[in-house]
Image (cartoon, rainbow, N blue to C red):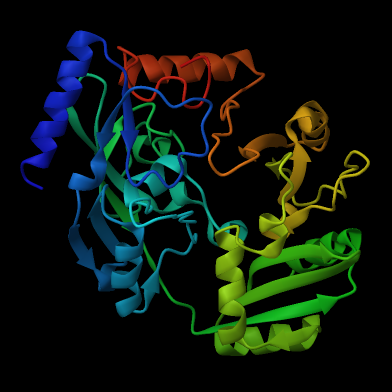
Length: 374
């Protein structure tokens, strides 16, 4: 590992001199999500290992190429976890999620609406910028930022601003109690109404999922927190209380998009991700589309629809105060081939262009990955 960092820096320095684009890649578990993939691959998996871990301080510093599963296993031994439940989307043994890729993608799992997003847990970061400089930002405590919070900026940047080499993350103890409530025969509108009502109450809500099967809707709500709080919530909310050990696999399948709803796509259907306010009503999807799968207490609506329906979905999401994104293409072998970042506000575009110019003036990092602008 000691030799890996200088080698990567030298690789970046040579790419700048030759104006050669570089494609930053960890395990490749998220290669399916891109407007385009181009450039010589820079594999970050040589940057591996946990640099420091202080369980009593709830902070871990880890090299970017470290397998995410390896980090989660170490945390679990200490009764701790990454509260935002990052998805792995791992395939073969050669396509495993890495910590750097987790931060670069900025994706969170079922608990995101309650626990927070990836960026909320990034305390510090080390990157190689587009000038081949090794830079550090932030640290290992929450109140460490004076000026622009570059550490959080890197979350969701998809490697377009810099090559992440090391990350310091806030971790949390595993909750002492967890259970799942099931509500049968609940329509989407009823589920949203329940979630909005419960969201205004002091309940230990952690995750939710509404899904329709054969025309019948079911709402699942996961509670996490103190034993007394979880028990009290179960009594006040109602529903059928499910065994936590039995439902753990279902929540994992939800995180990894392995539920039957996700896997039962036709050859012509893409997976769309609609991010809207939690209070948004049921969206009037075009005729013929199946009901969405609803997560994040109403804030995330997954839709299966052909690529040609994109304009309608974008319009629906925008009318509700949100946005739509083509998440997965028609087949597992294809990339999504649509912009990840496509703002309508020219002021936002200028900010992103200025950031790109500041961090990667030669434009060598992941060109075209998120937008035609970069």
